[in-house]
Image 1: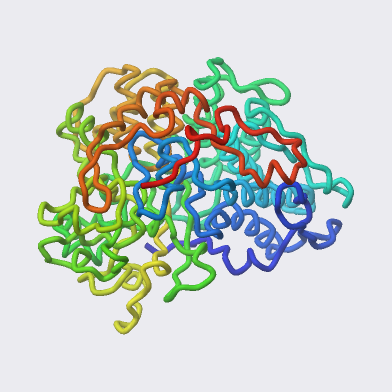
Image 2 (image 1 turned 135 degrees about the vertical axis):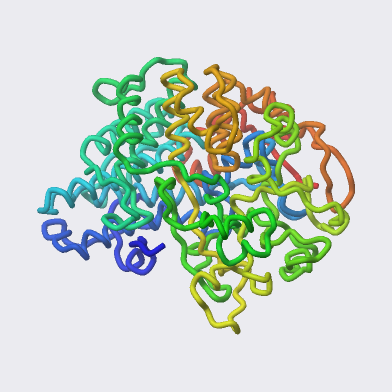
Length: 585
C-alpha cells in the first residue's frame, strides 16, 4: 500500500518547548519566541512532532516495560508477567506488586514531558493562520494531552495537574497540586470534547490527506467513548463531568455514530489481515495464513480498520535509539533459550518451529484461564487461533531454561515477525527490499506499527451504550459466528475475544467492577519456571485482595514523592511490606 506515513522521529528531536517543572523530574524546554512561532508548515510539524515523540516513544527510553499498553495487558487476567528469572518487575505487575521503588518512573516522566510540550504548543496555537490547519493541530494536541493524562490517571489515580505552560521561571518551580483522578478526568473530558468539536472530518482515504499515524477526529471520538465508559462504570455515575457541564451518554453515542457513518473506516473482511504475521512475504511459509496470498487479503499497514497506530523506525543494529523502533514486539516476543535469537525454533520447517514469530523477552505469556474460557464459551471462534499461538508439542518447556510463568501459549498480535524463509531477523527487511546481505537485529529491526485503536472497538462500544446487538453482530459476522441477542455478558465476552491483547481488557474489568474475581482465576493455573512445572501463586495478599486494597491503581514512584518534598502522597495499599514487594522466582 502506498500512502502518506507520519514519520516524526527526525523532526521531533530538533525542537523543545518551555513548561515542565523540576518537581515532575523532567527538563525545562525553551522554545522559539511565542509571538512568531509557529508561522510556517514546518514549524507546525515540528511543534506537533515533539508531543508525539514524548507520548509514543518516550516511555521506552529507559528500556523498561512502562507503557500503559504494556501495563494494561500484563495487569489483566489474560496475560501473566512472563519473561525470565531476572525480571521480577514484570511478574510483580501481574500481582499488583512492585520490585523496584521507582517502577513506572518512565511512564510518569514521559507522560508529563508530553503534557508540558502539549501545553506549550497550545499556548501558541492561535499563531496558525489557516483555520483548517489550526483546528486539526489543536485537536491533535488536545487529544495527546488527554491521552497522557488518561494513562496517568488509570495507572496512578492521584496525580499532579499542569493545566497550562508556566509563564515564569518561578511559576515553573512550584510543585503542581496532586489531584484525585476523578477530578483529573474532568480535564480529560474538557480536552476530548473540544477536540471532537474542532477537528475536521477527514474520511479514511488510504492516509492521503492525513499521514498514517496522525491523530484524527475519529481517534478523539474513540478515546472519548473509552473515557466515558470507564468513568461512568468505575465511579457508578450516569454522566462524565467537565469543568463546566457534563458529557452524557447520548453525546457519546452521537460521536460513535459519527465515526461509524462518516469516518470511512470499516472492518476488514479477514480478521487475520490485521496482524503482521499474515504479511505477503512470510505467508507462503506459514500454513495458517498461506490461503491469504491467493485471496489478496494479506496484512497491509494503514488498512481501513486502523483508526490510530504508532509508527516505528527501522534500525539495522543495536543503538541508543531503540525506543524509536517497535520495542513492543521485542518485549512481548517469544523467549529464546539462553538468549539465542537464531534458535532453530524460529526457522521454517523445524519440528519445534514457531515461525514466523521472532524472539524477544517473553513478557506477557498467555494466561491459561483465557484459553480455557475461550474454548468453553466460544469453541468455534476462529479468532482464538488467530490471536494465540499454541507451541508445537515437540517444543518442550525444559528448552526454555530461564523463562518464568511460561504457559506454552503466546500472543500472535504483538511479537516481531521474521523474514521470508526465516533466515533474517525481521520481515521489515522484505518490506523495504533490503539487500540479501542485511540480516537485521532482533532488538532493533522491527518497525511494524502498533495499533492503538481500531474500528471494531468503536462498534462494540456503540453496542454497549445502545444495549443493542446490531453492531456487535457485525463484528461476529466478520469471523463467521452466528448472531446473538444483546446481553451484558455477550458484550463482555465479545470484547474479550475480539480485542484480546490490545490493551483494553484491564480497563474493562475495572469499569465493570469484576476485576478482583477475574484476576483471582489466574491463581493455580499451570505454568513453568525454568522448565519445571508449577502453578501460579497467590503472591502478596492474593489477586483479589490486592485489587481490593489498591482498586487497581499502581504505586507512585518514590522519586516523585521525594521530589515534591513529601507534598505528594502515596496511593492506598502500597505500604512497604511483603504484600506489596515481589521478590521474583
